[in-house]
Length: 291
Ligand SMILES: [Fe+2]
Image (cartoon, rainbow, N blue to C red; front, side):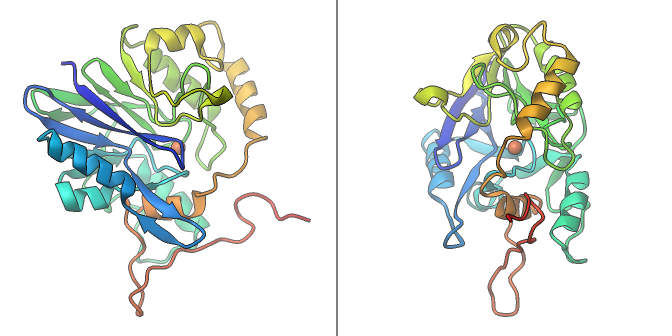
């Protein structure tokens, strides 16, 4: 099956979201959709998901799945908004439970937040298969960036989340709680064992050198040209590079709201007695206090 892939770029966060459709039946999945968020004002927005809604309606697609490659730390998910408008089941890798346990502690969440994955419609086991029209979606476990990270293989297209970026941008950071550079190396080797011509779609592009945003490459191009991890780079060298580089990276600007919404499958925390939803800010937890 050669699915029709429509990418959507969210310039504020450098995120790529996708609509993947089976051409035979028009059944579709959305992967990694973004909810706009203005941190200064504490306001959400639906400009980004509304573009996806418009596309799905114009193309006459039937939405079956809303898939997350992992609990993102750099943007909020619009999974629940899209489910409300278009239907579909929200799914994520089963590793989300461990991510939820970690962040429940970090954000000091109470008993109302259960770290059992029940916020999602479906938790995906490693190497499970989901139906999509006449074809299917294969769930490839690709931990390392986070321990819930998965990639989705649909026909000749693989959606790798934050495992790899474009060849000139390398790989994702591994310094979030639960991240592991050696694990990421092994996950990438698994992706590199796919057929050379497999189309590969990344979740972020930060436009190095001012070039235009790009989302698509191939297994072959990554194996020969990825600046961090290509054929011939061994695990020890990759782990060393990743650790040195991660030590220089800033905390993502939306990590505090993103994680709290994304571990709830794209929901805001339940409204309090005044009808308002509140996010928590753990002070001096992410990053270091400035002296
Ligand atoms: Fe990520």
